[in-house]
Length: 125
Image 1 (cartoon, rainbow, N blue to C red):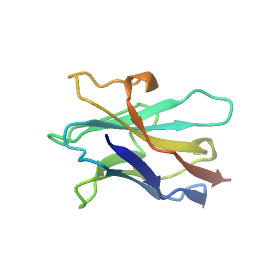
Image 2: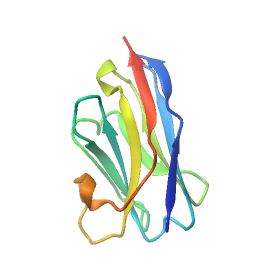
Image 3: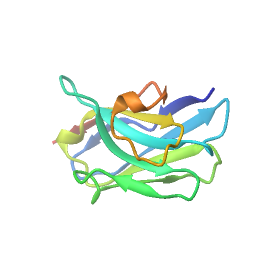
Image 4: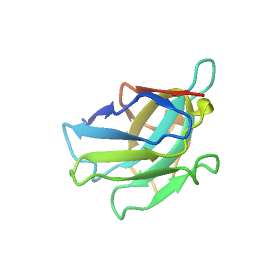
């Protein structure tokens, strides 16, 4: 069973960039579809994008596609979320998640079986 750990969160200013990492242990990402979500206080968990480890395809929500990018680190078991031009409304806990691929890129949190503990990103104005 895969365990996921997110790192890289912190306090930044509006306009800054930040790189989050999601590292797997207990297995390889190879069989999985990876996704990044975020959840702001009082709001539902929001899908940001997905990365298909086999083949490297990426998918993004329209709200972040011009500012966020998902990719793999040189490490075999690390997926990164690169965020640029951060805004105060990007403040949230950011999560990575994994699911066995089904040929469909799922956006519902319930579709994902494995989750990290989350990392806080705070963007000050």
